[in-house]
Image 1 (cartoon, rainbow, N blue to C red):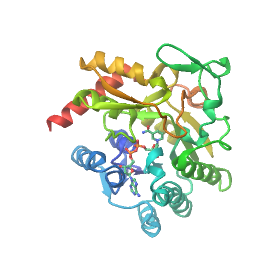
Image 2: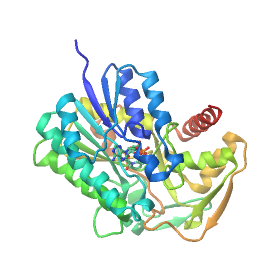
Image 3: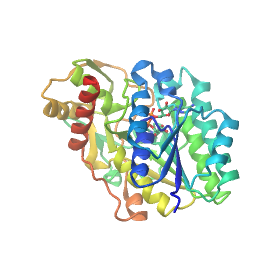
Image 4: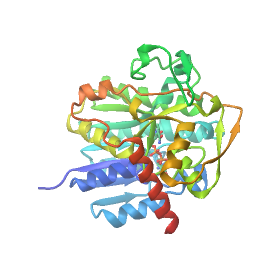
Length: 353
Ligand SMILES: NC(=O)c1ccc[n+]([C@@H]2O[C@H](COP(=O)([O-])OP(=O)(O)OC[C@H]3O[C@@H](n4cnc5c(N)ncnc54)[C@H](O)[C@@H]3O)[C@@H](O)[C@H]2O)c1
């Protein structure tokens, strides 16, 4: 029997490469799309070619396509040729801060690039599940309106309504998103619309902090990957505002791939899910320092900049109830400590190579 094929955009990035590995290991033909634009966005530190080589050497069923997702005709040609049984769209300009200096590139990649794939899929294979990597920045800075309490090492929600985190019903407009957040909102709503209007099996995964050993972490994107890299190299990490007590919930890319697999197996139309590590995998910057010091044995060097990033969340924890309810059996399998250890050893291995 011919194996099914899946198309993965952003395949040399953190999430894309994890999805490639996951589906290739499960006997799918995997087509990846990436043009290494991360290196253009972030310079040599963001270069993803090492990850592409790793995938090509490890998975014979993986085919790489050097394609810019802004190339509408090229996207239509590729989707028409491959006619994938599913698509995972993870290519993006992923940084809040960078977007402000490259507004056209940000919107063309994030919003228009997503529309290019939605429309190509509608024409060639509308029945194929379409998974879009959205972001919790679609909620803008509205989560900062939730009353907080200050603890010794972190901010936390003071309102018991949010004890288990933020739900998908949280409002997405009338707040400050960053230019990045706004382009992702455009794509997120369009992905929902192709589900509702055209009946396509689409979903938006509104990521908190997605992390894992194969991130090319840089200061502007890849929170834990970059923080751990700084620790290992003895570099100074800069904390931007909020006393270093800002909280992120972190999910390992493997658990993201497992959820995507479940959705593709039993898709729904126009769904949204908040996808993060939940309360159990939440950590503040100061807490992350303590954890990495305990893993690596190296003290963290840092400086404090008394200015928060524009629109940055003070405390963001994803409520995972809807994911668990729709896909029973799926849950987080990698806790924070495991994830730290994996990222640590991946950076050490890459440094040695
Ligand atoms: N990592 C996180 O913490 C996080 C959090 C929330 C949402 N997300 C979303 O998840 C998705 C994946 O994030 P990631 O961390 O894997 O990012 P990443 O930067 O590691 O991967 C994205 C990949 O897309 C490629 N790319 C960018 N522009 C392209 C273009 N024009 N054509 C072809 N390829 C292009 C890049 O080269 C890169 O390899 C993104 O949509 C991001 O917004 C990530």
